[in-house]
Length: 431
Ligand SMILES: C[S@@+](CC[C@H](N)C(=O)[O-])C[C@H]1O[C@@H](n2cnc3c(N)ncnc32)[C@H](O)[C@@H]1O
Ligand code: SF4
Image (tube, rainbow, N blue to C red; front, top):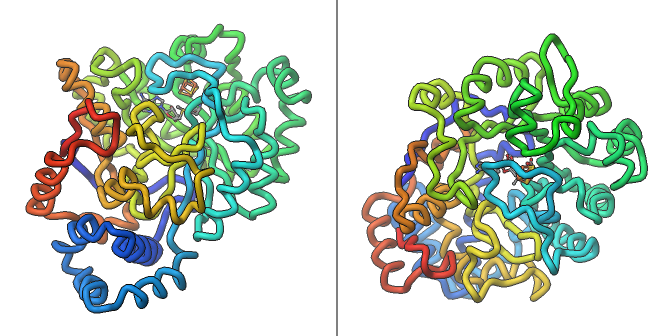
């Protein structure tokens, strides 16, 4: 099992830095809703070993069903911290370490369907929509409609992008019918912030890592170092507080992350997500991109908090609209009874779907555990990079005294009896 650590500083966008009060409030509403929806055992398991939740637990035991329902009704507008929504599965790059299949999906959500989900998420308290992407969000046909919806709903979007469309006039013209500069000017009107891929200051290596022709990922000098032109164009046209950099650490770039990229984000006051390579998709069980132990030690203090321990108060919606328990648990890893957001009101689906509710109170990183277990099942457990669940400093005190060993064991036994509800059943994730 991956160990957990606390990030010393949180350099993600401020919207992502959920406060303890918010986490506690949202978690309580969801626990009450799950309790009366027939998941008493799951909720009990979460509450029973947490000292600070015993008052709430007694309340659930002593209140009538109608009283709990009234409490849920009154507070459901505080039940979500954020929603993660995938846009298209298609991508214009082909990064060797990417865990997605980079393919457009048959039934991708349409703009109106996304708008409906976002509207409901906003009503449930979501403070932002997170678009980590299962492909490249900027080449989604509904990109601008998505931003329109965010604007109308006053729901800020935090979007991950490889940034290529902003560095390539032809591509920008083809997808959006405008120049990159015009696109960035248009973006100013929408509540959107970006994490832009900056994996290396070496243009040749970056093109190699994204598996694109070097002319499709041009670089230019900024502040004495080479940066992707798309990143430079965005930095030039958007306010700094809406700009961030994203980097996945692997063997080829680990030294640079510590020496060049992290200091660059510091100098420019940029948000950043620095994450460790996850073994999933085509890197499943493949240790060849893993950083060396020395690189790991050096980069570990730079790792960003993950949103795993916000599992109690987030919703994740895949490209085709399925509910997922975690961002990196992809559609094909969901159980056959997976549910789509069009099937009913979001709040009801979130509290009546067993594979979601049963994972809600797992505060460790399933995004990383599931791929590791896939690897172990495949007999390829030679994965050197430790899988980390990095907690946000703001949530450290409420997260760290989490489920005790006894509760963990009880849950493991229960899951073993029932089989796996998180994936298609052959994953062995009965932890
Ligand atoms: C799948 S990408 C989609 C968005 C966009 N195309 C991009 O790359 O920023 C979403 C995020 O997952 C990261 N990612 C992809 N494969 C990964 C892996 N094997 N381990 C960790 N992060 C990964 C990407 O770097 C990016 O930050
Ligand atoms: S990491 Fe992003 S840019 Fe790279 S292949 Fe995957 S989806 Fe595309």
